[in-house]
Image (cartoon, rainbow, N blue to C red; front, side, top):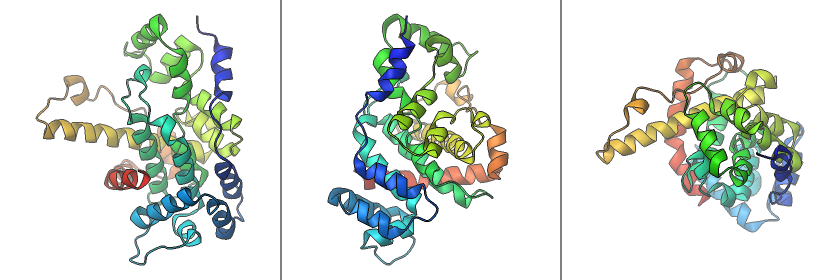
Length: 295
């Protein structure tokens, strides 16, 4: 039997985030943040500063003018994107691991996390309401709870979880709740809370599968970004299979893995199925470029 208290307690045992993330998150949570403040924090870590400049020049700027200062990079990218990039660097190693409990090979969780953050950053161009900047970091971290569950689930418990997940009657979240009594989104929110991240990031992670319950736009943004990232990932898998002359299983081709998109989120964000599709294309176009900038 799974010890739920031990599972919840394990969220406090993950290696803490570096001070740079906390300091930048505190700045980003204020409406009166300044690029000068962000520059002072980021400049304390030369390696991080270099990555930020590289990312700003490779994907965040449509200008032909090279960005050469941290302050210009933050202004061009925005504080939300800068915070997401700093956080991505901090969690990169742990999210690149294989998670067989979730049928994720090495690097797949990292790729999906970055893709979800890119989707959240693309949303402002396709929504009729302002997207909270903390959405970008919440989107990046939305699946961290899977790291904790993967430490505890194995053997007969994993077999039971697999059976419930595959029975066609449960969503992945419902399967976790039935078998474990807690789900990865809740645990991910507890991780962010334990890391003393802003409340908006905590809420965006905790309710990314149940945005109606979250009652905040950050929940809707992370939810929709997650759906977009999953669709982009599946499209890429099909494309790779075509190039390799492989066959996609009939269940996949028939859409058995149809995504659970909350209509309320689209409505609250002011999106339509058409703008959702356009946003997906944008994410697909940016993904490889962004991933290479993080390496």
